[in-house]
Image (cartoon, rainbow, N blue to C red; front, side, top):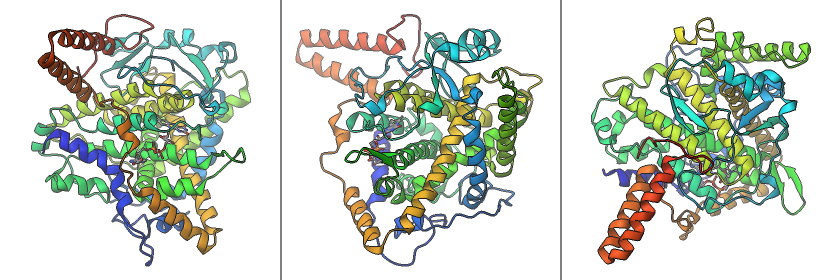
Amino acid sequence: MRNTNRCLIFRLLPVLPTLSFWVPVNADSFLSNTLIRKNQVQSVLEHQPIDALECENTKPTGPIDITMCDYETVESVNRDLFSNIHDLVKMPFFKYFQVDLYRDCPFWDDYGSCNNPGCAITTVDESEVPMKWRASALSKVDALVEDRHELPGCYYRDSDFCWLDDNTEGDYYDLTLIPERFTGYSGPEAHRIWRTIYEENCFGLSEFSLMDGKTPGAVTLPDTMTDVLREDGADSDQCLEKRVYYKVISGLHASISTHICAEYLNQTTGEWGPNLHCFVNRIASHPERLQYIYFNTVLLLRAVARLGPYLSAYDYCSTGSRQDDAETKEKLLNVISIAQTAGKFDESVLFRGENANVLKEEFKVHFRNVTRIMDCVGCDKCRLWGKIQTTGIATALKVLFELDEKTLDPQRNANLLQRAEVVALINTLHRFSESLEAVNEFRQIWADLNSTESEQLILDAEKAAIPIPHSPYHDVQQPSGLFAVARSRVMSVIQACKMSAMECVTKLYSLLDRMSSILQPSRKDSGPGAYEEL
Ligand code: FAD
């Protein structure tokens, strides 16, 4: 099947689950092996979370794909995890984050901005940040052995799954003052970002060769992706890594949506609070999205578990208060211990086989692109949390797929991770853990509804799921994914050249201008740069 068709399938993917109808028969659990396509809202909201530790699997069995743990295990540790990590992220080391939020979007010009007060954020003055973690001090200890691929203001090393700030620009933020919640950022601009991110899943031109090769450890997935790829004729030999990419992104999207619904602004009363209607529409009527929140949680826990010795040896001091330092260490050790129990993701089944390295490089390129796409998010608060979470997930992916035990040894590599990576990883795990907590709150709210109210919610969700002919997706005429961007621009030049010489020259000039702007990440600086895929 041609790549474009495959991309179309991925684009349709999000709406497939919504085409099912609610059939009032006995509810299965959304944890069961096959994806629920009936009674799904009830199966999510009437599920009783398990509180006994049950992770005894020694090899990956599911139902959380590629993990040795199942959903129950995550549930059984989440209360404890959340109470520790919720305190941990309030500690000075984890609450200050430096980032350049105002780098230009490298993919399109009209990325707009969210004028909603909810999108605004405030910076903190550098003097509030302990000296040791200021950019000037950090750059001194950032002695990395690997070669950096640099663009003005940011870089990546070969092992990185994201672009990292080089801390030469950017502001400091106190994350405890900027909760991830409803901001009002929505519509075609927000949809374009999500669509672009999902379309990075179409792994470029070498996809065909990858699909031809033997792929590693075939695992049957209980989700829509399986069906879609089966339509693709790939059956169980389809590429596991691409499905993992999709799950990571969809899980991130679902977690962000859960936070939006959990702290929603009622625009009539001006009050903040959980919005069950929002949660039913966005998550509960798509149980696989909740499954992917669990999936990402286990992936992040596994990274924290592997990093245990490194994180334990990390220097969190210089907070100015000895009590803070001791508390940070204590909470962190608790989180590591929980991660060692429940973080049973089996990274060894991925990136195996003859195309492993090519596939891993592609995976990295795509994920790095996702971190660049964050520069196009038109809402400051969403961009901040988007950057933190994509950096956190990228750090976890690096820890799982790039770093061996020797490299992770803190004695050998004390400066293996940037402070920003450690802070992002822990804050991202906190986001996912908090999402799972929020789901429990929604279960409670659901339990308190009478039957008329709950049936009405489901009816509303069904109505919301009916695709509207003129989707906002189509309002934005921007191609997405770098190949798509390049292809569409070249096509437009060819068209123009067929029509008139003048038009041809104008378009060609505009294309060259555009290419040069993509090659430079920021118009704040001009300097050498190369975009990976062009
Ligand atoms: P969207 O969430 O925009 O989703 C678009 C389409 O994607 C949906 O119609 C559905 O078909 C599909 N889809 C939805 N969820 C999934 C999933 N999990 N898996 C697969 N497909 C899915 N808004 C805030 O209020 N606060 C924030 O902090 C915030 N942060 C954001 C961060 C980023 C990086 C981005 C891109 C957006 C952020 N937004 C935030 C906007 C928010 O994510 C939504 O885009 C917005 O609320 C509009 O929601 P929607 O219901 O139209 O669907």
